[in-house]
Image (cartoon, rainbow, N blue to C red; front, top):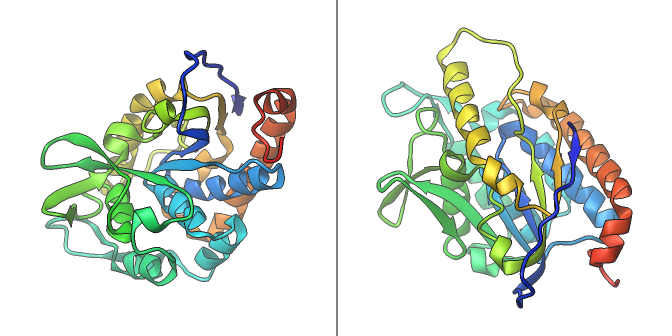
Amino acid sequence: MELQQTMRMEPETQKTYRLGLALSGGGSKGFAHLGAIQALDEWGIRPDVISGTSAGAVVAAFYASGYTPMETLNLFLKHEARDFLGFTFPKESFLRYDGFVAFLQEHLHAERIEDLKIPLHIVATDFDHGACTVFTEGELVPRVMASCTLPIVFRPLLVDGVHYVDGGLFKNFPVSPIRPLCERVIGINVSPQLVDQYEDNMLYVAAKSYQYVFKANAVYDRALCDLLLETDAVLRYKTFELKRAKEIYDIGYEQMCRMLEANKDKIKEDKLELGV
């Protein structure tokens, strides 16, 4: 199933935001978020608040900072994975992420979450206390990185005296953090299923294990979306497959265009387009 629509009936209460957008984690598959957002932009559908986990938090931070989806994609296309990541002695982790931190610090326009042009909810896992944390304020780059830090693959990130790891451990598809605040929510889940070829190495086993966790904890949040886009087409791409970012972007764009066209009557009825 590539396209799915779910409906929610809620009591008529005053909401803070008209439209929310929730973006899942998924490594390089997150480039599909950019393509999907481009399609939303072309339809005049722009969120009033965004939530993101891991790759979704990265995309959300760039979009909320003022970049267009294509501008963000082009920034990434200037680099290779080795510019962002490096191998380290496996005492605390397999990979270091210093290059990616420098990339975010150079290009994100806002220093703090609350300075962004669109309100942003960043989901990370409090590793010290075993809890899901949703950041809505504070220094931007460390909190985006906290959301992306897969344990074992990367070293936990210390923010304000607390160790954080990837938000996907508790909430890979962060619809529920913004659902109570929004009249409508569009969700984009780029990690819906697990179909790939087994690889005999530790990084693959670790990543695959986390994917099972991510899929399981997304079940509740999937049901909270008014419009839900999921696609199996991006699942063939590996976690750090930066070279094929444009292909993944195009898949997200095409799939979102198809979903919007299939649901144009509902979009018009719910007045999701700007100016309607």
